[in-house]
Picture (cartoon, rainbow, N blue to C red):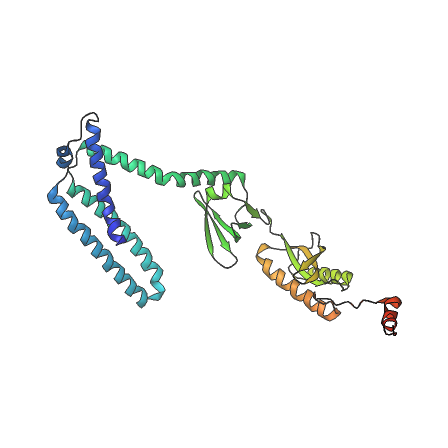
Length: 313
């Protein structure tokens, strides 16, 4: 059903164009149906119906062939899909031209209005593309990030692989390619981790109980970071801490801040440091947060009260 509507789109556009032709010839005169009918070739309309039906059948036949070939040659599936997409576009375009040529009498006035209608349609379609191209030039000069930078944008996080006139491509850590229109980048917030440098700051979080040795935990985190093969020693290593409430217990949040040698080693650096620190915590008896139970000393006065209540009245 959708394919039939797509192919029939040029017919509707042509009918609107013919109506515009008749209206443009003399706007002050009342509408003359004979002028509109004079542009239509009724024999061509009948033939155009068969052309549209043939195009629909051909596209369905093409889809079936591509499906069978993709199942037979799985390693060529993407190639077959590309060929099908280009073929469908060509069939749509050719069918539209044939239908207009068969169904209507083409003269200079019709060609002028069809060209104007086509120009307006292309102008609306190119609006976002032109905006993206202008934004691409702006990105080249403003440089919110560069190729190779690790960027977070709209919930996506990864490396910028290309900056084009229309879009920016990002390779996420899950090996997905994300395409971002340039005009979206200029209006939304993006975060760049390294901005042209190889090294980048990495934050690694740990939680310990509030009753644990805080200085020991801080020292173990620092040693775990400095002993990693991925740490960039030319920049400082910092450990910050704060107390947080986690559901039913209070925890001490320690965050290690250090720089990794190269952004491509970010996750390897986090894994290496986390493993080293957790092993050091276990070895030195630094435990994670837990619900604490305190025994309250009632004192000598409250201890004597039960014996006083035991005396007879």
